[in-house]
Image (cartoon, rainbow, N blue to C red):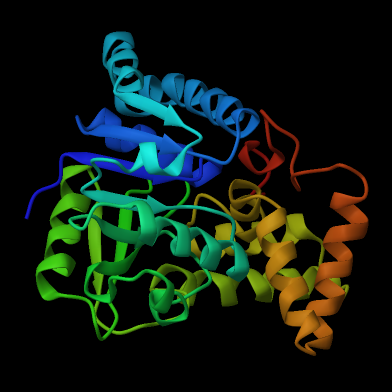
Length: 291
C-alpha cells in the first residue's frame, strides 16, 4: 500500500505542521478548512514554519518554497478529497464537530480513501461509526513541532484492516516520523499517557500553593537533566489545551481540575496571556536559572 495524495482537514497548529511536513517530504497535499479566514490563518502558520525548517533541519530556501508549492487549499471538502489516498483529520477536539465532519466526509470521499484522526483526546471507537468505513479508519497522532519531535503514534481499533495499519505506519516513516504502533485503543496513546499526569502534577503543585512554576521547573531540570520543565513544556503546547482538559474534567465532577481550570482562566485567558515565560528569551534558558 502506498500513498501519493494526502488531504489534511483542519489547518490549526498541528494541522498546518502535518500539511507542511508531508509536503516537505514530497507528497501532494490538499488542505481543507471551513472558510477563507481559516485558510488564510493556516497559510500564515505555514509561512512561519519555513524559517524553522531552515534553522532546525538545515533546509534551503528553495526546499521550503517547493514544499509550500505542493500545497493546495480548499474550503470545499469534496474538492479537497477528490483524489485522496489518505485523509488526516485535525479538526477541533469537540465530539460533535468530529461526528459531523466524518458524516460529511464519508459521503464525498472516494472508496479508496483511508481516514486517520489526529485526535489527542478521543479513541477510534468513539468515531468509527460515523466514518462509513471502519476497516479503513484509525488514529495517527503527532507531537507538537513534528519536524523535530518526530513521533507518529498509529492506533488501530478492532475493525482496522491490518493492511491499513501497516500502510499508515509506512507512510509515517516516509514523512520523517518514528512510528509508534499502538495495537489496542488507549486514551492518551503512549505520549499523553505519560505526559498528561506529569503536567497535571506540576499544575497541582502551583495551584495548591506548594511552589511557584519556576521552582517546579528548576527542580525537574536539575534533578533529571531535562532541557525543559513542565511549565516550559506547557508553553509549547499552549494554554488552551490544558485549560480545556481541566474544564472537561471539572464538568465531570473533579474538584481539583476545577481549581486548575479557574487558575488558567483567571491568570491567563482573562488577561490575554498565553505563556508562563516571556519569549523570545525565557528565564529557564538563563545561565543562572539552575543555580
